[in-house]
Image (spheres, rainbow, N blue to C red):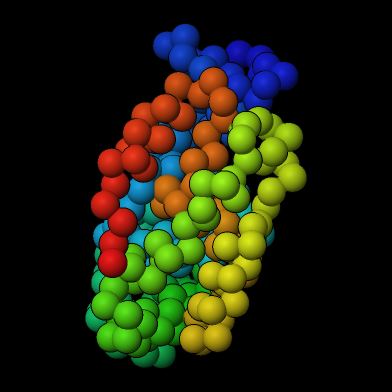
Amino acid sequence: MAERTDGLVAGEDGRLRCSWQGNVPIYRDYHDEEWGRPVGDDRRLFEKICLEGFQSGLSWLTILRKREAFRAAFAGFDPETVVRFGPAEVERCLGDAGIVRHRGKIASVVNNARRMLELVEREGSLAAFIWRYEPKPEMRPTHVGPETLRAITQSPESVALSKELRRRGWSFVGPTTCYAFMQSMGLVNDHLEGCCCREAVEAARAGFARPI
């Protein structure tokens, strides 16, 4: 169905959604069930920040279709397992056609597992650290339309998060990557006005106990 001028598109069920999901079933389900819903689980946060790094230069749909293969390749993104990856495991990943075979990004996951364990030791949890960068309500747009999302690919909070992660030795965590991560993990609600999921995501955020 044709995209509307408000950035929404109607699905076969008649519901209006953000047009970026394109009514592709796996993408639509991700949009409806995951994107923007707040996450406080360390492993899910670690997985997503690693996959955002793999997305760099690619589409999220490409990564989403390979997500189960990534999970298999990286031991379910268990940092205590991934941190023990050596040259043999990196070569195994480079030979895995189910994932993105980029040596730098694969090495980044191993590096970031080590950095995560260091962060958890100092901060208590990755979730508690990440959620410190949730924007204050007054810093958010009063109306989220397509023009808003075109204009915002990073934010002061994503710049600050990126800067601090990189200071701590993380890689593939630029400010645009961090903003996409914040969108997906529910630190912001960037479902468009009129999207069938916007109110549900806002309710989930309102009821979410921020990690401390």
